[in-house]
Image (cartoon, rainbow, N blue to C red; front, side):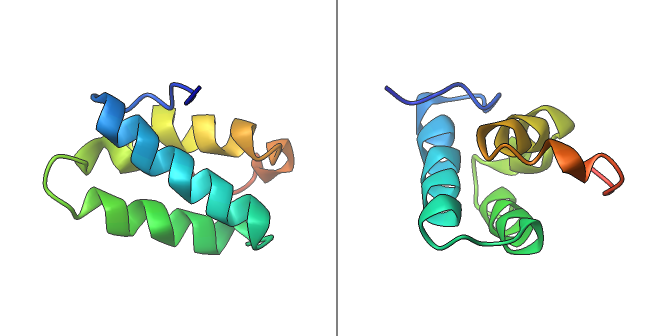
Length: 72
């Protein structure tokens, strides 16, 4: 089951979930994950990928709660 990341569509949540999975598998740092969200937000229909709600959901999914000092 795909988690709700705050995207407007199931396809959006699936795309963000894919980013989360890749980030976990490749042990990417936040900057790489953030850039993947930026790239997704540039795609038609996925602009909300850079919304605070989505970024916070990704941070929570990756257990990166220590990123409080990073600009969200």
